[in-house]
Length: 204
Image (cartoon, rainbow, N blue to C red):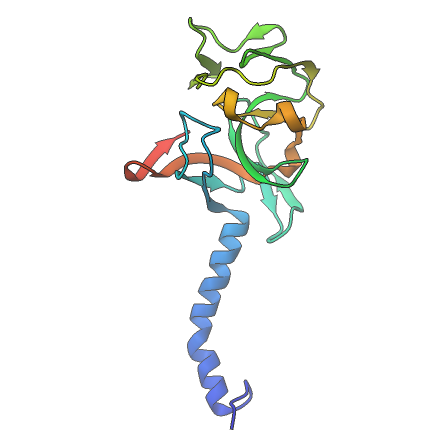
């Protein structure tokens, strides 16, 4: 005879399995709302990220969401230029990882792979292969050129413009436009697995 949850044996199984089931549920909640990892599928973010790297994603960085939904329970930080973010492409839904280069209200241009905000270049040093975002210098990969030019474009409020650091090999905001900040899944904070080295802890 098959046990049911109301049979003595079924109850014993349920009681003995309850801690494991609760742990699995808590892990799912944590991955949905707090932190997760992301496997880098391509070289569009070289040299910061290489294909096969894994990054830690802070899913509550821009707000706490109701588990398994996009409904924001309360807001977090606003995305900032220089953040590496996870989102679904607006045109085809592909999950991507890119860098925020401009936020709402910025007038942005991209010429030969270099970003200009309100007419000022992000790149400060010859031969213009590094861009400054706050106190962070971001190395660019221009081995395949700069890719598609863009703008001038004013980023709408509540949106961000994202680009790959490997400018000539990245399908990004130059192709599908700006991304609503509310659609960002989270911020990638650290590389936790480096393809060529194994376990790592490198800030982004």
